[in-house]
Amino acid sequence: MALIRVADWLTKLLMVLAAAWAFLLCFVILADIIFRALNMPLQGTKEIVANSVVMIVFLQLGFAIRSRSMLQADFLVHLFGKRTRSALRVFGYLLGACLFLLFLKGGIDPALRSFANGEFDGEGALRVPVWPTRFMILVGSALGAFNYLVLAIVEGLGLEAEEPVL
Image (tube, rainbow, N blue to C red):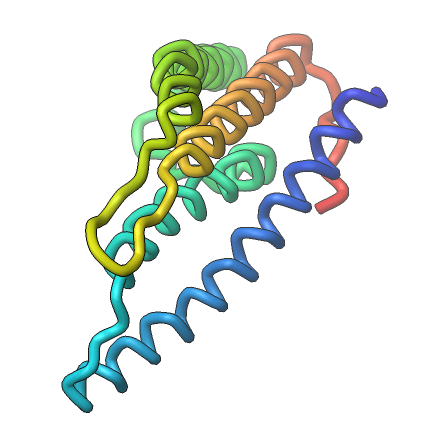
């Protein structure tokens, strides 16, 4: 299905972007450590790192869900039959979709308000805009909910899961 392929492509793109951002963030933290040793800390490092960690998590969320890499406590599931296991998986996927749809619904107003008001984090020399982080939460939540729904449909209908092109 074309929509699933587009979502897989977007999932991969966001995962690569998150990895690149995490890699660059390492250099920001290293520079701050070196400059702190010279008694000249980089201003705004705390704010950049705090917002970046949230963005990286939500950038990689769709990939983790679609590749079925989310943490699962399946120690009891193996005791059930195949149909029960499948039903439990569908139930779990639907709960995951509901959770991220709630994140999406709850995050729209704060994201729009943050953008409209020009919300910033930090004081002094470097102020970091908050709205990109809030919008990344929305994008990650929407993609996460979509991927959970795809997995629920595939599992519920007993379809052969098309492996993502990740």
